[in-house]
Image (cartoon, rainbow over all chains, first blue to last red; front, side, top):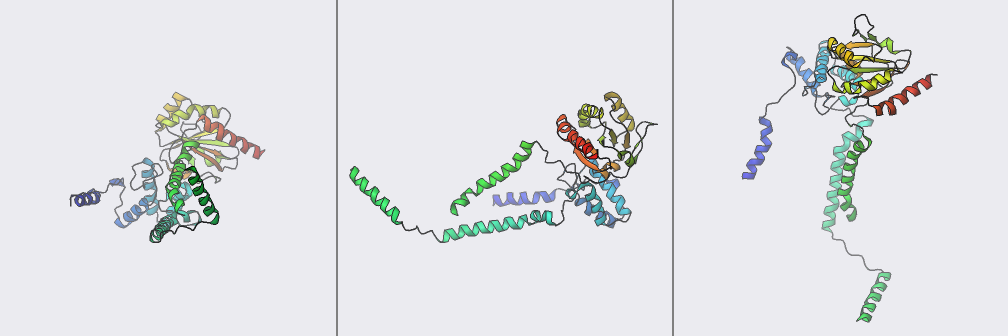
Length: 158
Length: 179
C-alpha cells in the first residue's frame, strides 16, 4: 500500500508543477488565434543554442530573436509551411524538432517499430526455447569410439 | 542461436561505447552543426559601418576574391580567445568582421584594446543578418569564394589547429582552383 502511494505520488507530482515558458509577456499577440499558431510553431522549432529545447521553452537570446522573427512573419501573413522553409534554409532540417519523413530520415522514424520487432523476435525465440527443451543429439560413431577408448584407458590406469 | 543471445548485451555495450568514443577520440564537438548554406551565395545584406566614415559591409564586398567573414562581439569571451589567431590570419588574408548584437561604442573600445584585424566591419545590432547566415552563436567564421559563395563555416573560436588544418588548406585550394 505504501509502495503504491509512493508510485502514485511520483507519477502525479509533475502534473502539479505549473508549466514554465520562456515567452515574455510583451511578446504575446492580442489575437489569441494567431498567438496559438505562433506557440504551435515555437514548440516545433529547436533552440540551436541549447539544442534539446524548443524556442518556446528557451531563454536564449537567439531563441527570443527567432520567436520575434516568426511573429513578424505571421503578421505578414506567411503560412506555417513558409516559415518552416525559411528556417530550414538557414539552419538545416535540424532546426525542426519534428523532422519530415523522407529517404534520409526513414531509419529515424522506423527505429521504434524496428526496436519493437527485434524485441518480439527475441521474446519469441526465448519462449520457444523454453517450451521445447533441446534434445541432446545422438553421439556420432567417432565420438562413441573416443568414449570407448577413454573408458578403456581409465580401466588400465586402475 | 542460444549462444549468440548471450552476446547481445556485449554488442549493445560496444555500440554505446562506440557512440561515445567517436567524439572523444576525434575531438569533434557533437553539438556542432553543419551549415545549411555551404555552396550557397552569401545572404543579401548591407550593414552600416562600425566606424563613422569607414565603409560598412555589403554582399557585393564579398565577391571578386576569396574572403573571410567573422561574426564577433565584445561581450563574447571566445572571441577574445581567437583574436590573436585572427590577427595572424589577417596579415595574409582579407578578413571582414560583423559585430553581432553589440553596442557599437563597446565594440570600438574592444577593438582599440585588442587591435583591429578587419578590413571592413559591418554592425548587425539586431542579429537579423546573423540569422540569415544561420549563425547560432558567436564567434563564427566563414570562407567565401570569389563568386561570393559560402564554402566553409567554423562555429566557435578559431584555434591554431583549426586555422592550420582546415582554414589555410581550404584557402589554398580555392586559390589554386581559380588560377
